[in-house]
Length: 207
Length: 207
DNA sequence: ACTTGATTTAACTAAATTGTTAAACTGGAA
DNA sequence: TTCCAGTTTAACAATTTAGTTAAATCAAGT
Image (tube, rainbow over all chains, first blue to last red; front, side, top):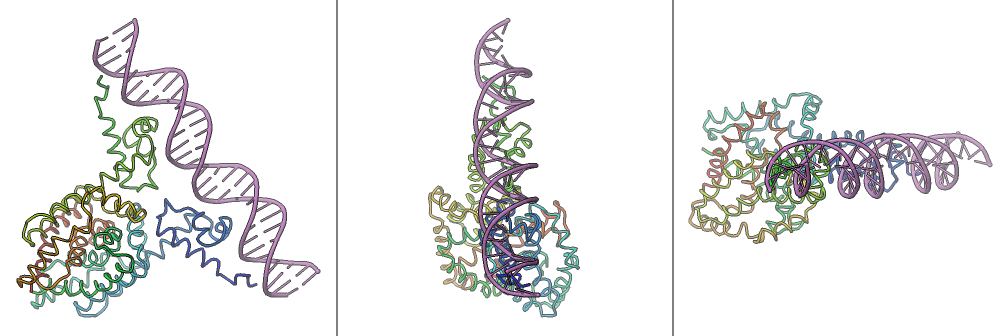
């Protein structure tokens, strides 16, 4: 019962195409026709595989959110010492976003338009998102008490880490022009940035 | 020749409504009907004042981009000493975004979908965006030579400043859930954040 | 009372878009 | 060869949306 384009090759092609189109244009501006063309098929077959635009979008969005958030939780809950943990977060985020440049603007834009989705995702993830900072906070308090880092609010630090790592991808077109870089140049800058951010944070935390 | 709703009150109401709807939903998802309702009028009157959706959007977008970028350039070119300049940037950005929370996600989303717009804006602004970092870089090199700050790439520092200040607004729904804050709580955290970021950066730059 | 410009109402056109359907085609499997 | 699931084609319905228009209404100024 194998097909001419064997097995689920087509389904995969559709999902990839949907991913690309939704991610680049957002839900509202994405057209089923765009996805069909990108996948090299026609609209009819799109509906043959996935009933509706909404259904497809939910699939893609779930996947994208997972990529965007999944790795982070594990690192946050790991047993690494604080500085290593921070380094791991930064490197993980930038590595992921170098592979998926339009991921954050897409996810964040859709979340801003439908903030309730965040709750659904949170439940799905098992742990409540407010727990994300729990361990991190405890570890920071210990270091502060030990005098190894300055008095710093963990929530504020966390926002700084995320902002430094993720924001340039969100503001990519602006950054490219201000720094006068093409895509390759931008990626190169972001690669260097892994070490840059980590050093920056460690210095900022020093007493 | 005064109208029942005197003078250009209606035009203003429409512009405000358009601003709100476009900013919250983005161009593609925004409906003329939404704008009309928000302005308390009907679609016909919308077209009576502004010919088309595109025309309205261009107006709003230009305004929004100006708010987003205009203040920054002046601060960057000012004669303030480096640390004061950094402080001014941070406070300016957070103050503006507290007044216009959905500004960055809107502008950045639309810029990502139409990066060429950035060039048009750049030309409009008079100075080329690549000049933004020129003076800042010179000042940093001087401080580095004088030994007052660590060796640091100005471009990297600039991205960090912007990221720390702007990103929480872009990721607002995520931040609110992780920090367990409502809108008021979020704003309070962002207010504190002005000082938090400035201190953080100054410590990070110390040799 | 008359005029005038803003505004509403309601209908309409035109286009785009999602989703459906039936019929034909295709290439490998039984 | 026959069968079958995947695929294409082409047409279609239903809905949404932008934009237009003509007539009626309204609120003020003259």
